[in-house]
Length: 162
Image (tube, rainbow, N blue to C red; front, side, top):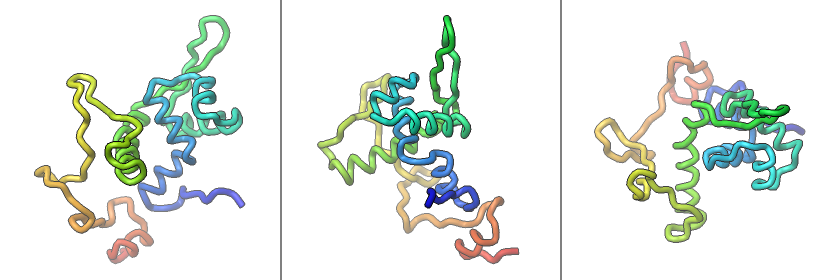
């Protein structure tokens, strides 16, 4: 039995998971943020099989998260670079890391600290805020169908389908 596909789901989270493919893809993107670009470097750092890495890199290129760039001066040699779409994942990776710091490792046991390169200060935790900057929790927000919602999503979110 193959992996469930989310392509038909009207859900931004499901569509993001469809674009990633699996956990290897997030780790590849994480390493790309660290400046990693070469196939051999991804393979060595992640301990991932060549066939799996090849498939995940192709998937990320297909979805526009990475671009494959020929950097060979003699012959062909490729690197994988984050696109603008890939760089837009910084808040996602930050949120996952912060969640893990709090709930897996615990504050004071973080494996990595992220600092502002300019000031050297630790970056503040991500928060969901309102337009005035007030921190919002789960009970402060509501979901409503957007312009692209199908009837199933409208029902799920309590709106009447047209």
